[in-house]
Structure formats: C-alpha cells, structure tokens
Image 1 (spheres, rainbow, N blue to C red):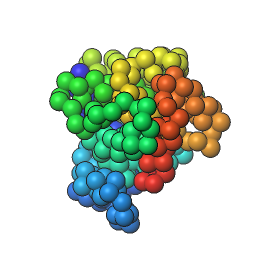
Image 2: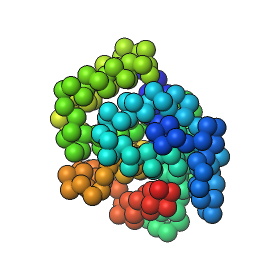
Image 3: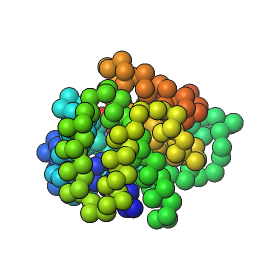
Image 4: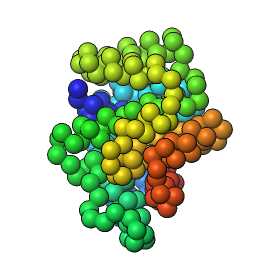
Length: 231
C-alpha cells in the first residue's frame, strides 16, 4: 500500500481548502523563524488537494475542516510535518539530558520503506483524531470511501482505510502503531493538527492518546508549541 502518497495528499488538502497559492506558501505566512522558513520551502501547493479536500472535509466535518485547513495550509505535505516534528524533537533533546540522543529519525529523513511505516502510523492517528468527536456516521463513511477511491486505486488501501474508519476509537490501539519515539511524536503532532481543542471529547481523546504514546510532557509541550507557532 502506498500510504505515504495518500497521507501526503490529505495533509496538502488544507492548501486547496483555503485557496492557498499554487506552488508556494499562502499569502501572509510568517517567515520569521527557521521552522517557518523550512515549512515555506516545503509547501508545494495543492497537488491533488482539490480531490483530497473533499475527503478531508467529509472526514472532519465543516467546522473542524476549517480549523484543520488553517493549520495544514502552513504545513504542506508529509515532509513538512516531519520537519516540524524534527524541530520539536531536537529542542526537547537539547533541553532534556535524559532524552534519547542522536539525530531524530523523523519521516522527512528516512528511506522509502521506513517512510511507509511512519506514514501508516500517522494516517491511523489522523483517522482516529477525525473520529474523536463521534460525528462520522454510516452515510458519511460511504461518502468518504468514495472520495478515497478517487485518490487511490489500490483496493488494499481502500479496504484498510474503511476498516480504520469503522473500528471503535481506542487510543491505546492507535498508539500501538508507534514503534519509535519519533513516530509517536509525529502521530501526536498530526493529531493536534486535526482535533478541535475547544471540544471536550476531542481534548480528552488527545490527552489519552499522549498518555498511551508515553510522550514525555516536555516533548508533548514542544509539539503543541510548534502547532501554535505555525497556525
């Protein structure tokens, strides 16, 4: 399954949803920090975003989709998410002597087979976060399946996506996909991008996911800070 390709399109959909600039960062994007500069260089426009935006809109619901668009338009695709996870993880390492040392192996720095493994875990987190408010009913699932079918012709990918949508929402099950600390960081970062923290159910889900991912509180705070800075 080409999970990475599908995830990349879904993450880029924010650009299309908000009418982002083709081939570049949206107008008004801040350039002040190194992190934002890296994000700008990685943004590559919608790239299938019109199609992906339909799936994201159905998956997240109108209010949440608008919030996601506002964040994702700054992030771009999968590589940009990896850059931001790397920045947060590196800052955490520098400030915590007990943290694992060495260059973080985030999704933007890995060979293709490992990118696919990370993508699989991140997409599970994205679907879980999208379900956290309980709004995806059977009819919406059918519509989402139809949109996903437009994005990928891989039957295995389509079946897997449908199975994930239909699973009971269990933060522990989603967190079990994280086999490295960097993967856990990426999954949490993607989840923070998706959830509406003003919603009690979604905020509670995010807290439980962080617990199940066994994120160090300082790393969790760094990831949340990166979302606030770039949103």
